Image (tube, rainbow, N blue to C red; front, side, top):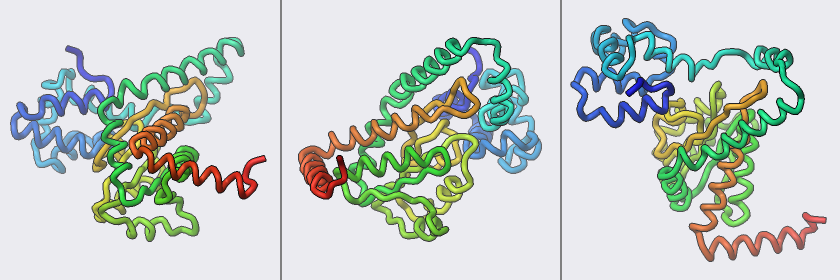
Length: 287
C-alpha cells in the first residue's frame, strides 16, 4: 500500500496502526500529529528532542508508514499546512491560464460540485456526533473570522430561527478573549477555519480549552490547529479553480447542520420557528 499523500490520510493510518506501534514509535507519532506546524518548519533533530525520542526514530517511523524517509513524510505536512503560492501568484496563473472563459467557468463549477459532494463522503459518522453536541448544548457559541465569518453568521442566524441560545463570538470591541472566558462546560463552541488559519480562531481555540466546554471544529483538516483538541471535527474542501480558496462547502456545511439540528430538536423547534416567522412578518421585516 502506498504512503498517505494527505494529512487526513496519514492521521487515519496512524490511528489504525497506533496500538501495534512500539512505545518509541507511539511517542514520535503522537507528537507529529499533535504538532503539525512544528513538523512543517523544524528539523528532524529538533522535533525529536521536543518529542523525547532519537532522530533515527522519526526516520524509521517514516519508513514504517511507507515513506522513503523523513523528508517524504515531512513534505505531507509542509504541502498541506503551507500550500504553494500566494493569492496574487494564483491570480497571475489564472490570468495567464490558456483556456477560454467558458472552459474556466465549467472548471470552476465542476470543482465546487466536487467540494459539495465530498461533504457527506468525508463526514458520515461525525455528522451525527456534531448534531448531538449542538442539540445537547446549554448554549451554542459560533466563531469564524475573515472569509469564514459568513458561514459562522449563517449558522447562528439559521439556528436562531428556532433556538434562541445560539450566539456569535465576533470580537466586536475587542472582547473576544473576555467572551471566551464566559463559556461554561455545558456550552458547545463551533469554530470555523481553514488554512491559512486566522490568528483570532487559533487564539480562541486556545483560550476556550481551559473552560471545559465542548468544541465542534469545522475545518479543512483533522490536523488543523482548531481540530487538535476538538470533541468533534467536520472537514470540508477549499479546493478551487480561482485565486482564493473555495468557501462553498463551508456555507453548505453550516446550512446542513442547521437543518439536521432542527430535525433532531423536533416539535419544540418547529413551534419556535412558527413563532419566529410570525414575529418577523408582524414587524414588517419582509416586503
